[in-house]
Image (cartoon, rainbow, N blue to C red; front, top):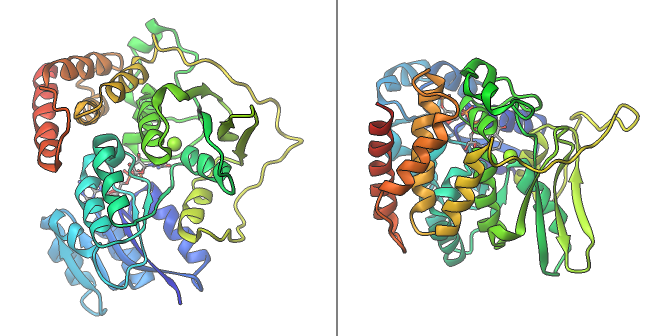
Length: 382
Ligand code: NDP
Ligand code: MG
C-alpha cells in the first residue's frame, strides 16, 4: 500500500522538494492532497501531474481558476483557509506534511492531530507559537511528530537507538549572509542581500529569518518541544559550511551528529519514509573536497533576535507567540523596505514588552495574542 501524503503548502520550497521525493518513489508514496496559498498556476500543474484526490487554494478568489483548469479530472477542489482544516482529516491520509509559512500552519496542524494523523513538521512556527498545546495534543492523540527541519532531523537521527538522557543539544547554524558583517554594515543591508543565503535555497520568509538568526531562535524553541530539553541545554554553534546538521551530547560526554550535503530532500524523505531509509541520488559529501569544518560562538549583539527568542521561551506562556507574530510583521516589512534590518529586533522587543502576558494560554488566547501582537508591531513600525 502506498503511503498517502497530504502536503500543506505544496507550491513552496519544502512542498516542491517533497513532490520531488514522491516522484522518485512513486511506488511508495502518493500525493493525496495538495494545497497552495495563491499560486493557482503551479497548484494546477502539480495536480495534473500527481492527480491527488483533493486540492485546496487558500485564496478564495482563485477558486474558479483552479476548478476550471481541473474540471476534466476527478479531483475535488476547495478554497479558503477553513478547507485546510477539513482536508487534513480525510480518512485515507497517512501523514500530513506541514509546509505552510508562519502562524497559518497552526490551525490545520491542530486539526490533523485531532484526526490522529502523523505530522511531518516543517512549519516550525506552529511549535514556536503553541508548543505546549501542540505537544499535549500529540500526546493525547498518540500522534508522532517527525521533524523535517534539517537540524531537528539530525538530532532525531542522532537519537535513533538511544535510550539515555540528553546532556546537551548542539544546534548548528550557518550564520547566514551577514555572519562576518559589522554592526554598522548590518544597519544598511537590503532585502536583496538578505535573500541570498550562502548554503540553502528556501522560501523568502525563512531566508530573512536566517539572516537575522531569528530562525535559529525559533529552532531552539522547536527543539525544546520536540526533544523535551530546556533552552539552557541547547547550544547554538555557528558552522558556516552546513555539513554537520546538528548533534546530541550524552551524559558520558559522547557526541553523536548527523552530517551530509545541505539538501532538504534528505530530511523530507526520512520524515515521509520513517522508520525506513530509502535510496536516493541526492548529492553526497565529497570528503577530499571538504576544506575545513569550523565552529564559532554566535554574536548576540549583532544578532539580537536569537537572544530575544531565548528570552521569550524562558518567559513561556504566550511570549513565544508574541515573538512569532511581531517577527512576521517585521519580516514582511523588511522585505517591502518599510523596516531596517536592525530595526526588526527593536520592534519585536518592544512588542514583547507591550502585549499582556498570559501564563497558560488556550487556543483562543494564542489567536488573540497573535492578532494583538500584529497590531502592536504594525503600530510601532508606522
Ligand atoms: P514557501 O514560502 O516557499 O512556501 C510556503 C507554502 O505555503 C506555499 O505553498 C504557499 O503557497 C503556502 N502558503 C503561504 N501562506 C499561506 C497561507 N496564509 N495559507 C495557506 N497557504 C499558504 O516556504 P518554505 O517552503 O520555505 O517554508 C515552509 C515552512 O517550512 C516554514 O515554516 C519554514 O520555516 C519551514 N522550513 C523551510 C525550510 C526550507 O528549506 N525552505 C527548511 C526548514 C524549515 P503559495 O505558493 O501559493 O504562496
Ligand atoms: Mg533549519
